[in-house]
Length: 81
Picture (cartoon, rainbow, N blue to C red):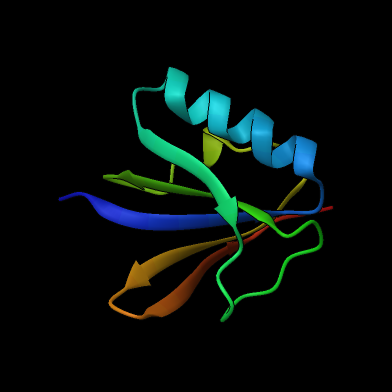
């Protein structure tokens, strides 16, 4: 089952690198402003869909990964700066 995810980052470059890696992995992804309910150091996030959070594709400067459930966001992973 495809789930919707939001990955936030400490830097804009990390968000861009992650979007490219997710695309290479065949996932549907787009870079976007961080949703109002969440906060992020750089203000950019990767919105993507997949069967899992695809942590292996995300840059090491990852801040957090959330799963979208309706209008809510569930924290799945807190990255290490």
